[in-house]
Image 1 (spheres, rainbow, N blue to C red):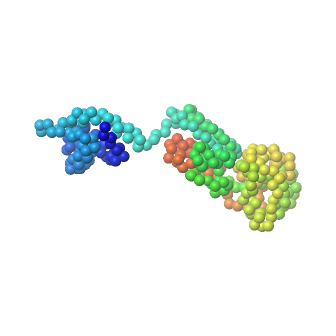
Image 2 (tube, rainbow, N blue to C red):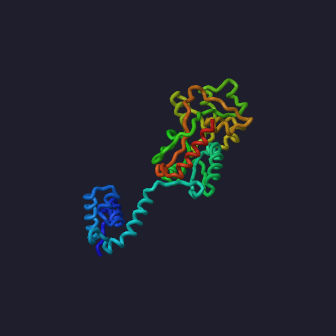
Length: 306
């Protein structure tokens, strides 16, 4: 049996063949396909070569299909319909969607954003499934390889990200949290007594320093990290009864504030411009309609933060 190399066939030939089979006329097929009659004649010649059949033969003053041509009518029309599905733009209908999203976020960001987002998601798309997980080193790897649908973080600070796209959501800045009757508050916090104090450090891995340490090093200073935390919402519990101080984003500080805590600006030497928290996703999801819909909901929710 003779087999045709499909990869060598121009898709436009399939459209020309459909027109020829439907009209049984080179002239009418050319008009239907917006081709010149010579161009359609050349297409017919190529098709006859590919299928090893004349397809159209003269009969009186007109032309008729060969048995092979008649047999191809429905399969060719069906094939074109399937091809059109491949290239048809995706339409996302939230009410019918059954997508599943894995979202990774620091717990303070999730607490700020996700209640509003989830209310909208489950109202508009009740069959969608969402898995929320805390920020982690393993999750960052999953974000970069597409296993995690969406994450939140500062793109230009922290672990190196690859194969991702991002959209800015809101700005924040670093502040200092300490207990309300902390000795440092008696005379005000300076860069020197800040460095000399015992610190808690918030880190997703529980290891490493941060930008503050780099700035202190430039000034010949070094702080002591007495406690390393990976859970954002444990801050108030460990800072309130101790002399530890911690440097955290202001929006986080406002969430964990209690009557026992005091929030203050960093010494001027350590103050820096605000940083931007973004939603981050693997490039494979950039054009996906369901993911675009979710990201729009998140962006809208973040407009209400300030």
